[in-house]
Image (tube, rainbow, N blue to C red; front, side):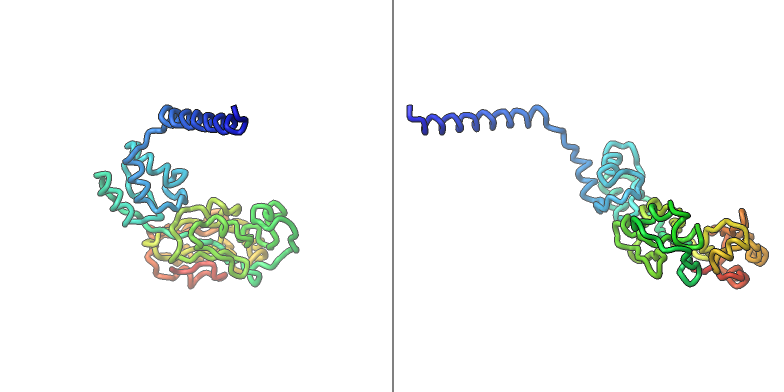
Length: 264
């Protein structure tokens, strides 16, 4: 037989055999498709932010489709609109998503917390913090190298004058920024809860805190004394506000000698 023809037949035979084997394998090893799960996935925004408590949209979709969870309001990125659509599709109560926003509890700009050294190294907050808490005098302040910026899937955070700032119109409260912050100075605050915010996490004694940052809370208790709603407590030299009690009168902000309390 002609060697060329033989080679063509041999290659063709191998191709046919391989095709048949792949066809059989695709049937034998096929993964069953859950149509309900696919339908839920199509409704979800696809942000994969993890704000629902699952690894991503597919994890939440699988839990809803299987009946493991019946709460349609876990998708903070999609909000009430997504919750309503999920409820209609699955025949469940939609519920409502409490809108929150990330808040960076720090005012440690260079004017308030002077640099104590020139940092040269891996420009991440996590790395810089390992060296005496970062380059700023206050060991509790925002490092300012943007680990939270990199973690945010919604482009809602930027670094302004060495401090992270959240765009409340873009924030979906997924919590990734809070998890990425090595100082743990980012919290999620419900938008509906307006009132006083203590923009500080420094729990050092008054003199040390004041030396580290001019806007640090010194635990003087003046805010607590003027609060008629008993919404403020001071623990470990740091004031905190119970936002469920705060009436938003603003007296605490007026009484604070270091201007570390803001109203929103």
